[in-house]
Image (cartoon, rainbow, N blue to C red; front, side, top):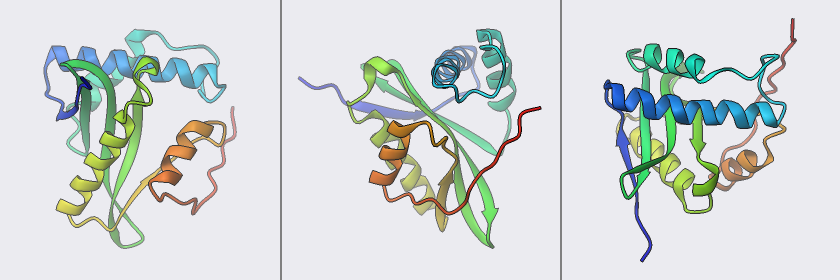
Length: 156
């Protein structure tokens, strides 16, 4: 029997901070392995915990946790922004544990954001993705995302 993906809004608890920090750390590790991470060395889990511990109290951000059988397997962080004179939801990060991929987890997370966007009368959903992250680009295109800008970075 297939288990159903459940998406829940995170709470400001030690348990959810630990879940989100663990998922964020895994995301950072994958980005680093893909040479996408912007730091010279791979960050410790303490860095993820520190960021999540602050971000979870930021009223402009909302975190959602994906679970199968109550096991955390993915997350998404969103922010409301005003872009081009229209309310937009920005996907700050989306991550699914590698062993939980191809189970419609990312699909469920994006569908949740689409529902939130519609409820809040947002006109668009936007995100940034590295051109090196081919799997993410493929997923986003499947959902109708299109490239409308070119992000540039200069390392110092």
